[in-house]
Length: 279
Ligand SMILES: Nc1ncnc2c1ncn2[C@@H]1O[C@H](COP(=O)(O)OP(=O)(O)OP(=O)(O)O)[C@@H](O)[C@H]1O
Ligand SMILES: O=P(O)(O)OC[C@H]1O[C@H](OP(=O)(O)OP(=O)(O)O)[C@H](O)[C@@H]1O
Ligand SMILES: [Mg+2]
Image (cartoon, protein in one colour):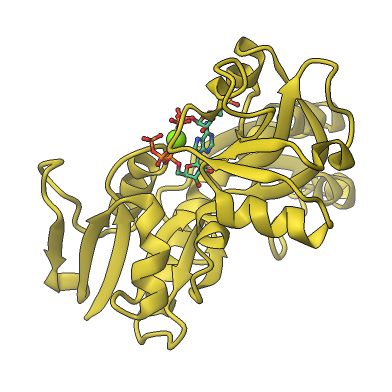
């Protein structure tokens, strides 16, 4: 039985639960449930705080878990990242009052507020910067205005929270983070199936299927536009000089590719969603 840690709250919880449901696993019916058995899939889910997941998985108490790369590194847990899950993308950055800081060295001797002291402390030490860390639980962006720190280091997605507090980003990128699947140091049997299922969900989210008909003489040029993951399926049509093509394309490129195919001479261009996939 594979024991899986899932975020019970916060930015990761909703999408993590959705992905697991799309991958065919049982979810919780009530947000107060902490453990959900899924005997049909031979797994058991443990709903935990995202920050604690690396601790449970690193100790081997649980086999795998979904958390953020930033939380994994901050925890200094021996758990290993085994797959990126393509959601909750963010960068981890330093920020200070507009115009006051321009490079990392400016932080020497200054107070830096963060909820990720492990991650930020290691980064500053590696770069030989002697700052004092001020550990906060959240809403870190308020720390400068309220006078407990000179600068902050925090998760940045759109940058709106920083801007609203009169702060601006400076210095190097500390980390590019996203949601990840992590595994205990010993690994566990059954992990491969979970990874393949989650990868199938990511493919179904990222790609669509496109079908089109085309004069056979234009096939090479059309395949250059839609090469697919391996290679397109090309079938004969009733019309002898035409072929039908079926291929996967990135969902966010759909309309550009449809325009380019139409201009080339393709017709009957149809796009359909992928419900599930194993590539
Ligand atoms: N605005 C955001 N965009 C993308 N990822 C984010 C964002 N905020 C947080 N995250 C990611 O979510 C993960 C956990 O952060 P989260 O905010 O859920 O925890 P928390 O701060 O402890 O919870 P809460 O904010 O509910 O108190 C981290 O990996 C972080 O990078
Ligand atoms: O760049 P933005 O799009 O503004 O997003 C980044 C903000 O989102 C998260 O805050 P959250 O809502 O989780 O609150 P917290 O700071 O209390 O964790 C994160 O800690 C940043 O503050
Ligand atoms: Mg948060």
